[in-house]
Image 1 (spheres, rainbow, N blue to C red):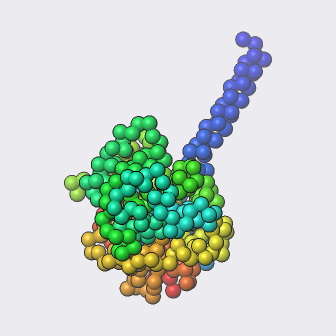
Image 2 (image 1 turned 120 degrees about the vertical axis):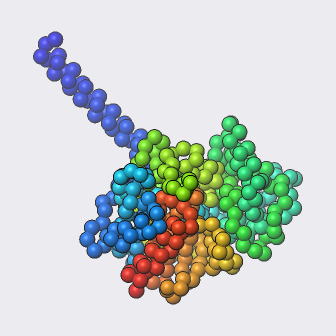
Image 3 (image 1 turned 90 degrees about the vertical axis):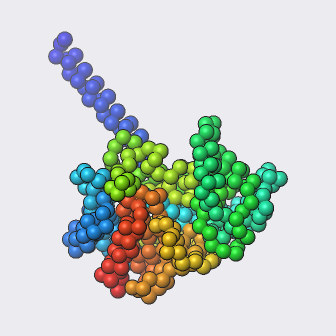
Length: 409
C-alpha cells in the first residue's frame, strides 16, 4: 500500500470516528434530557462537613442537601457512596429519586391546562371520560380534578385491589403508558370509592395517576411527554427523567437501597428499582440536587421569576391549603403526617421555626427526598438520600432543623 493510500485511509478513519462520536453524544443527550454535571461547591458554601456525620448516625449510603435564598443556591453538598459496600462518591450533579415530590409538578401541569381552558378545577372524571359513564360505581360522579390533586376525592390506595390492578397492567402487552393508565382507571372506576368526596384527606397515588390520565386525554399526549416539554425544559431541569435514577447496567447515579435482613442492598436499574412507571404522575421523577434546588427557587418566586409557566394567582391556588391532614405517627416516610394539604403541596409547622412552611416529601421505599420552602422569606431547603425508611426520615428531619438554624435566620 502506498504512503498516500495509508494517509487517506487514516483520514477516513478519523472522520468516521468523529461522526460516530457526534451521533452517540446526540443520542445520549436526547435520552438524558441534556444532562450536565455541575461542579461541586467549594469553600464556606459547601455542606459536606455538616452532612458527613449523618451518614454513620443514620446508616445512609448517600446524602445531599442544598439551601436556597433570594433566587440563588446559598449552600450545597453531597456525601457518601452511590452503592453501599463500594466506594463510588456522589456529587451534587448525581440524579436522586424524588418520589411524591413529583405531585407538585403534576399539579402544575394540570394548572397549565386549566388556564388553557381544556380543564377546570371542578372537571369531573365522567366529563373527561364520557364513554365510561355507564360503568362508574357509586361516588365517582362527584370526583373532580381538584379533589384528586388535594387527596379529597375519597379514593384510597386499597392494597389488594390496587395490587391486582398493577399486576394486571403488566399483562397488557399492546398498551403504552398512556394506554395503561386509561386501562387502570377504567377498571378502578367500576369499584365504589371509599369515602364521600371533599369530606376528608386520604392520600392516594392512584388518584394522581387518574389526574394524569385526565391531562393526557385533553392534551392527546402522554404525561411524560408533557412533563418533559412543559416543565423540565422550560425550567432547565436538565438532569430530570423518569423511573430508576441510574441507567440500566451501570452505577451512574446513587442507586436506591432496600433494607434486606437489616442491611442496605443497592438496587441496579430494573423493574424492582422503582414503582411501576404507570404511576408516573404520582411519583417517578428523578433529578440532580442542583436541579431540585432550581425547582425550589422557581416555586419560591411565586410567579415573579421566569419562566412564566402559569399566572401568579394560579400558583397561589396550587399552594393554598384545601384540607387538614390528620396527624399520623405511623404515616409512611414520604407521605404527609399532619398540617394541611393544597394541590401537590403540603403546609406544616415546625417546632424549630416560625411557620407555616410549604413542603412535601417523596419516597418509593428505597429513596427519600424532602423539600421545605418559606416563601415569606424566599428561603428553602432540599434534601435527598438513596435509602428509605424511618431512619432516613429522621435524618432528613434533623438535617432540616440544623440547616435552618445555620442559614434560615
